[in-house]
Length: 422
Ligand SMILES: [Fe+2]
Image (cartoon, rainbow, N blue to C red; front, side, top):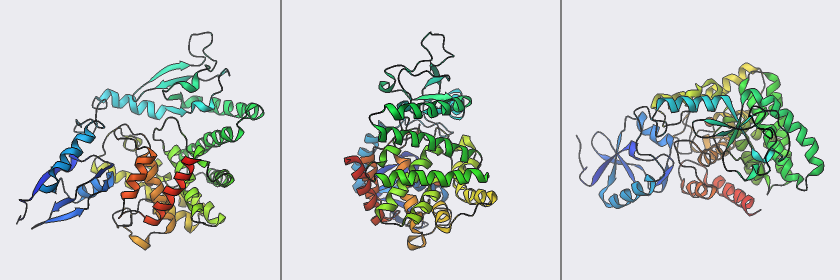
């Protein structure tokens, strides 16, 4: 029997925007009452939405006293989102099937470049394209009919649009990076900056190789070497390693996310004085934390729209898939590294996955992985969600009282604050 609904008004869960902070309490209806589900000032994340959906909750209730706050909330976020979500969960321009197809094609066939690694005036033997959300347009390279088309323009670093190359040209780009590394190291006045850029670019190549063939034992050995390189770069200058995270495209790719999560985990681990050997284990777990995503259908993984419940469940499988892949590779991974991988989606409140662990049941490395993974996801562009600035992400993290380890969050904010100041 339904009682006590008079002082509440209903809101469809689909009307709440993912990754926003709700400054009002949310209530849900049980068989005979309205009960508090989530207190105000907590983020409403994709997993909150799916927790509700899993419990077949499509409508939440809000106190009449908060009606004005809800109206303000809708107004504030109207600018960030398209309110028209198609039945398949796509927003414009992805509500047109041909745009979705072009997006998938671009996403899977092209590789994002960072302009900072292209030397103005240098010659390239691969084609570079300007990238939009759904398409690419030839920009420079030998394939373009122009006498200067294979020379990197002087103003390359000033242009704002993201650039990509076709996957087939990655070996040529890798050769180019090797060549300019040896040339540029003698010329550059800012060697540390350049070295960070090159470490980041080479890391992306290695992680991409690992994700393409995770069962290959040689690739896992490469992962260990990469973690050591990143560890040394971070330890060399603890207040400047955010250069490792700087990416110009901001688009979501598992390999850039893995690189960021690895670097940030080592940074956070070092700020709580973990031993070097532990930092290397944490870094390896963080680097490989999403390795199981290669078992998930890429069309779901890279869907430019809101996931259905079934799609979200498919994505959740990536945690156990990571463990299975590592077992199949025959590589002995330490307990600490494995905990980072297996627990990076667990939440202190017990509402995470795959094991619904809570509080102290979650290993320290799992708690570190969870914070860093959440932060990087917030600050990364996705076609259907607002991108958070680091400051907005700090604010959001500060509000999260139930899901993440509060003392680690404080350390994390101080650590990133030091990077910004530096
Ligand atoms: Fe993950």
